[in-house]
Amino acid sequence: MIELSSPNHGPRPEGVTVDIVLVHYTGLPTAEMALTRLCQPGSGVSAHYTIDEDGTIYRHVPEHRRAWHAGVGCWRGCRDVNSRSIGIELVNPGHEWGYRPFPAIQMAAFRTLALDILKRHSIAPDSVIGHADIACTRKEDPGELFDWQSLAEIGIGVWPEVKTACPQPISLDDDTVGTLLTAYGYDVETAGLHPCLAAFQRHFDPERLSQGVQTETLDRLQALVSANIKTVPFKTAPIAP
Image (tube, rainbow, N blue to C red; front, top):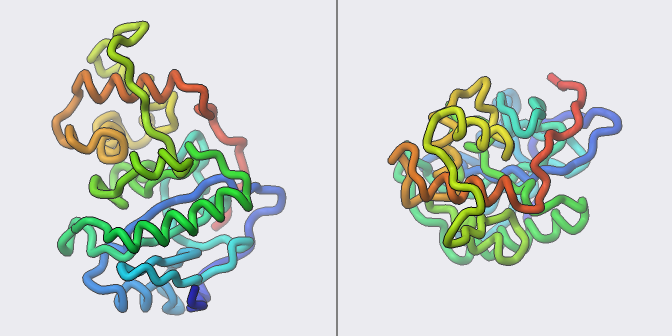
């Protein structure tokens, strides 16, 4: 691990527990540009870690400090995600500059880092989420090529186990979709139904991304909401600047 400090951070609010790992892609043409921006005074952005495509891990902000990576967003009622999260950036040009698969060596480094963070902070697997999950209207990262399913197999994130027949068939009407998305953690009230649905598909049903409401998507959504995992709002916390 290489220490590459960023000045862009502040204290976490007193009494707030770190209980989210938020995954990003850098979304810039090169790793050098991304690292420069994350560590540039006055840029207003940072993360705790960046993982390059060759597997090199850079540490920018100590975990006990509040990095500036989440921006405006909401997850399970929490609107100050920065205060309770650890942010990990993966070098990738993103959708604007040529989105591409994440190399195996980069994902291996992510797995090692993420498992260590989850263990040390006792973070639940379902609290490993993507930037798009909390900011559906403005973010797409880490995107549909990020292998959430394989990660869930080792306890990093979760993946829906869909049975051949749901115990309660689900409707395709907007109210049902919105209720399920809200129950899982998406901010449908503020972001709107369709951005939240797209974010869910990007994370949990990428093969049907941008196809709108599909029965298969809702099967996966219902499976997650019905599973024995944390689907209740986080406790409220003071919103830091």
